[in-house]
Length: 322
Image (cartoon, helix red, strand yellow):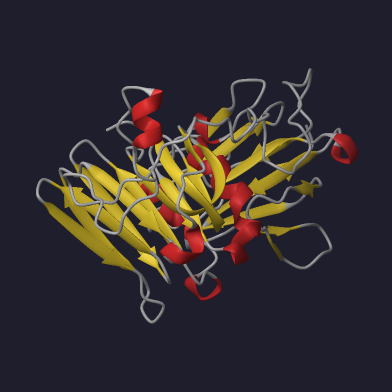
């Protein structure tokens, strides 16, 4: 299936990436930048779901996650949302429920997906645009894009009935069609680093610190250092190739790409800074002489020599002088 989606404007946040789509209610604006970073970098179903629930479901009233594989489409819904999946002559309807943890379905051979997070009367009739990856405010979205058959001439178009959809106007697969508008450029190219944080500096001439690993090995912090069970470079965009540090996690408590440590910029210039990358179980930093501090996902914290970052599962990393 094409990666493009059509959408109608609304209040919810729609985050569209190459491997996953996430829709969040208006109350979850603080989560959007971190999830856009993740989804835009190609995160799939498991990694995106981990990030969504990393701070607990109690604080997340609703969401939609759709991820398409080669022959299977996975859907997870919580709260007031609906997803319709067309497959052959059947349409599978999945509705969220705020009283449960979430509703999850896997459907094979899906030909079309429609996400609805607002009533039809609230969303308007015409499409607002078509996008191939991006971040928008929406009430509904459809993939592949909803389209209208082109008219043969201006005269026939003028004599035709209104292009607004009738209640029973549906495609062959049972999902409603709406007029298609010109594709729009919705999101400017993303700058390197984490949205809202200072730009990531290039590789430094000398390390600003070293990381002492549980194995006794040390790693220079002269560029982005990604730590996790199976860290992936595409999680963070930097000016230099990041260092990938694999740590053992017998109970799988450490996320695949759990933590970034890099040279700071601006007020943090010359120091190492750490960012939790939306890990499932979180990270805790203990600075010398201070109580433990939970790292908020996507928020950069300066590390001083002697600081210890605990990733869970017995994995702790100490910051030492370069």
